[in-house]
Length: 132
Image (cartoon, rainbow, N blue to C red; front, side):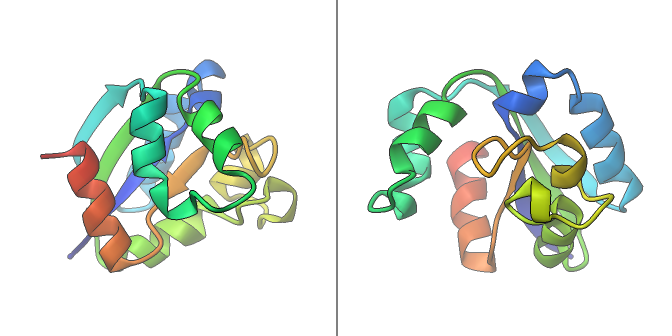
């Protein structure tokens, strides 16, 4: 079994589609190990996304993720990281495969509904950030 972090971002919380996304997560065979509602401060968001600090989108990313409530989930299943990334779809909802979460619920590259860890190392770091 492998674990990964998922975040249902503020855009999805505001659109009241959290339940639909959780239903999709469970229907894809993930077990939700832990789940919390959070509202990241700008400082916490900067810490979480520190790897992107030098990128031109960093400030917008921090502002967005700290703009409202998010749901953080610790997910488990075989190949959790890779499979969650498939289920999420491309970062750009317009280029995401039909049926993926970002294609269905995302609005733009910046407001793309969900987040997922991209590697085992990242997953370990991100999980530890939210779940002690």
